[in-house]
Image (tube, rainbow, N blue to C red; front, side, top):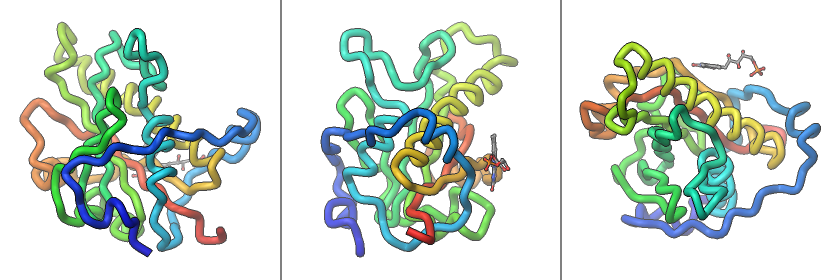
Length: 200
Ligand SMILES: Cc1cc2nc3c(=O)[nH]c(=O)nc-3n(C[C@H](O)[C@H](O)[C@H](O)COP(=O)(O)O)c2cc1C
C-alpha cells in the first residue's frame, strides 16, 4: 500500500514528531545486523520521521546539536531519502523533507539487486564546502567517518524498531550524483537500505 502522504511527491513534508521506541540499548546492540531482503510494505511516515531523527536529527535545540557526531561539528552530511515517489533531502533543523527529484531513483542507489525494491534507500552526501579548513587529503576520510556514525544510528534504530537495514558502499557514485543533480562539492559517502523484514 503506498504511503498516503509521500505517494504524491509533495514539494515539502513536515514530518510528524519523532517517537523513538523505548528499547534497552542491550536489545538494540544484540539485534544489530545487516539484512538484504525486505518485505514490499512501505515505511509509515511515523517510522520515517523517527528513523531520520535517530540518524542525524537535532537533539539539542540550543546548540543545534545532532544525534551523530561530526568532525569539527561541520555537520557536512545531508541525508537523502530515496522513496518510490521521489528523492527527498532531510532538513534536520526544521525536521522536514524537501523534494529533489519526483521519480523513483531507488535502482540508482546501489549495484545489488535488492536495492531497486527496498522501500527506502538513504544516501549520505557530504558537502565538502562545509568542511572549512579541512586538508584536502582529510576530507574524504572524515566525511566517511561521519557518515559511519549516522549509519550506525540507523542500524540501532532499526534493531530497536524491528526494521531491517544494510549500509552500502557498493554504489556508482558518479551515476547517482548525476541522477540527484548534486553540485561539484557534494560527494556521496555511503548508502543504506531500510525496510520491514520479510518475516514480519
Ligand atoms: C563501510 C561499509 C560498506 C558496506 N558496503 C556494503 C555493500 O555495498 N553491500 C552490502 O551488502 N553490504 C555492505 N556492508 C555491510 C557489511 O557487509 C556487513 O556489515 C558485514 O558483512 C558484517 O555483517 P553484519 O553487519 O550483519 O554484522 C558494508 C558495511 C560497511 C561498514
